[in-house]
Image (cartoon, rainbow, N blue to C red):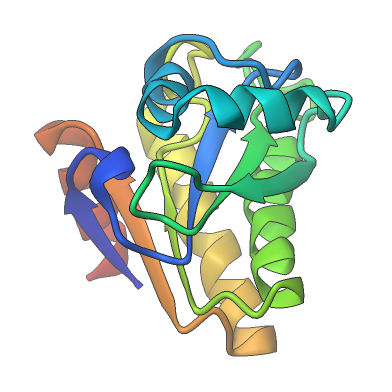
Length: 164
């Protein structure tokens, strides 16, 4: 498990995780960047998936991305932390990892789910992400290569502190 600062759309891994909205049809931030980089075939496949509920995850091909697959998950909108947000966020990571296991994927990269326009505080979101992934890997042992891909240096510092 490691954290890096990079553009997630440039990573050559088995799967990148998309911090998607419930329609799965593209949006802003990471979601928009992934859709732009993957090309129009991604949205065409996403139209067939019927959306996605918060905390759940679905997989598509990667199309023009270096990643073979995109695992789309819908993080919770931050509403103060007392509305099930921590469990929903943990479910995003667990369900994405389970899809990776189910598809025999060995490498996966996560963005910092829900910390963009959904407003989840980075420190709390990163702690949930790292704790949930560590627990999942302790139980399953795969995928072998998990990367937290941070957009900013400030976010990277938060993840690195938790991983040290």
